[in-house]
Image 1: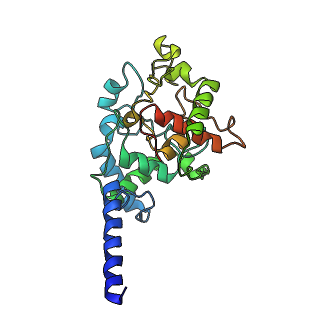
Image 2: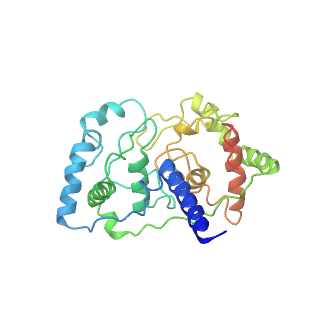
Length: 266
């Protein structure tokens, strides 16, 4: 291959790679994007954006009591987040810990299916400014430095045996009690109406056959994060202790969960 042909091939490859990034949203929504320097002006700008885009649900002081918030959480969970308290559901940190900045950025960017819209309409600087303002509402963010749990890469190709082992783990840890034998969210606890969040509001078990409804994301990595960290404030606990020393088995459970919707990643 001559030098000109090599340059053309490299340019074509790069173009394809950029297209993939654009389609998947990795270029526009990376949580590691450059954020503006935190100062009084950026904090005030974050408050301005918050009051325009977030206060209607989360309240003017971030306590989850905005005008729409009362209707959203009047009868069942979830209510809008109270930013002045801990107990965040969507995290990459251990149960009971605060979320990382990247967790907050991911939630703001992707939204929460059926609950909160995605805010990709805000540019990255605006999203970071809102996050800085939200963190200023809770002094715990100044005192703690949350760190994510290790997130190992999944095996390249799940085997049939791995999926079957995942079903064994699903039954071993009584996942069917809430999520149902077939993962449809109609387990005996759910049908009996015994599931409640920390606000004592009725809450439904996730329908595992519909990954588009997963509040913490439906990819293999998202499921790993949910299983190992739990969703604080809900009946979904962390299973980190159960999988201590056998983290590779978590992937078998994940493959089984994905098989319930026919969307097994390979």
